[in-house]
Length: 63
Image 1 (cartoon, helix red, strand yellow):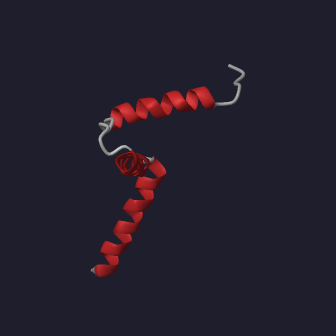
Image 2 (tube, rainbow, N blue to C red):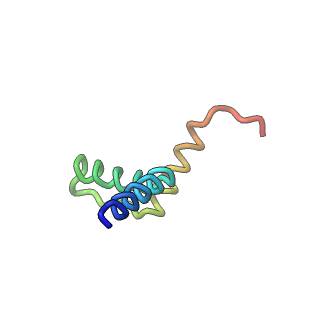
Image 3 (cartoon, rainbow, N blue to C red):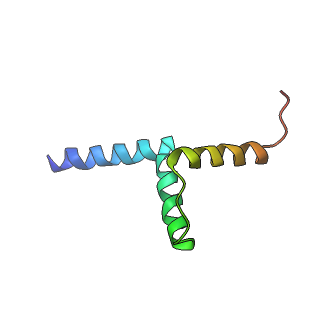
């Protein structure tokens, strides 16, 4: 039974890492450490900021 729970935990961790869900959690930890009095953006706001940053930093596209 413990082995099944452990394997399930590993699979869930892997899926969260692949989906990028843990990226927001890490961002929140870093934000709290460096800016303790600043408000945290919501997950949706974070996703928008992340998308905007990636679009600005992306190399030239043909389309």
